[in-house]
Image (cartoon, rainbow, N blue to C red; front, side):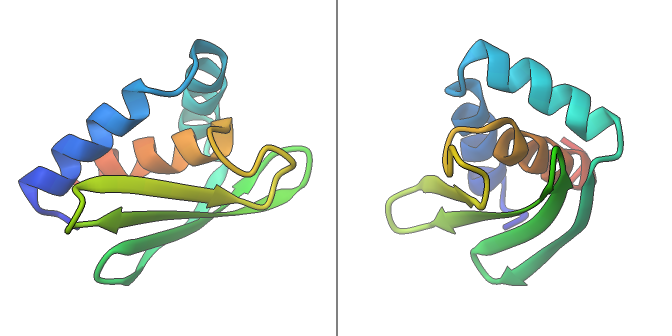
Length: 96
């Protein structure tokens, strides 16, 4: 998931989040709320994000379709600040 195509697609995917989720997710990423970030398979990331509660987040890269998918244990489940924060942290780890 360090491939240039996957990382570029992750950048594009994160641009599609609504403004509020981006702003809050950026604060979460900078504030050290993303923990246990790891690649758990060839196309899947997992992390925990400290919000009101501790949320489990998964980001998955579908190389065949060239798309990212997300899941979160928060009430929104998708498109949330927690997923955005995890994506930002992965990009930072990759040096993007």
